[in-house]
Image 1 (cartoon, rainbow, N blue to C red):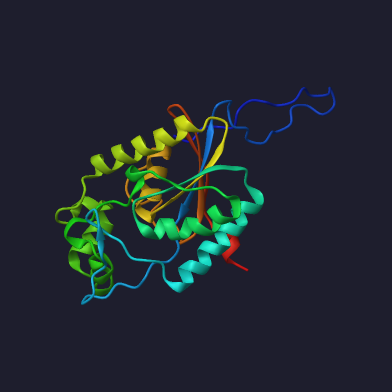
Image 2: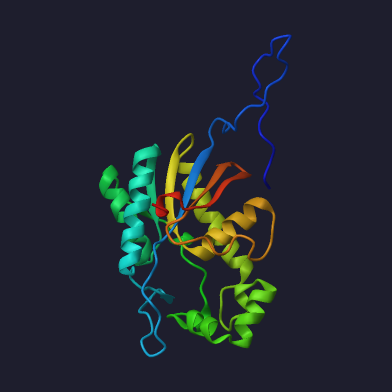
Length: 233
């Protein structure tokens, strides 16, 4: 759940009273910057994406490469990054590469942060169904559950593995800031879990956007969603 700002107000003067203060992470907390991968290659009904572990594994579109460069340059310039995490899918590796090169950090794979498995709709089928206005796709949007797709990963399983992956990252980096280059569905579910919402409230983060969680133990605070200032130049 999101929580109020901590009470760290400085001592007031008699005339001034109590001032508001900025958010300060608790000692031992980890800032996790969730970067959605850059735009991936187009889906074609007659040319399915290659699969990696059952997941569609497209490479970045040329525009996605430019997006990766933009988010990498921004984060390298303004954030004290201790580690970079990627998933098992190559679009996250390609997106992390510019930042990793600028900082001299080797990305670490956290497999449990891979995208939700879409069952029969892997390999680009989801985009095809979306473009066609497929009735089941419309039901997925209405019910706000990926697991309505035949063979798709159950929501409870998806949420549990994301929390396991996030927990390992947080345990390894107290009092540090890390970047995790992940996927739109992953960001949506992580932020839904953190804020106690359900469904697709946070699905739809833009490619190469930045969202931010501050995590300590069981406390998860959402500090930023879908920041794309680096893409607007």
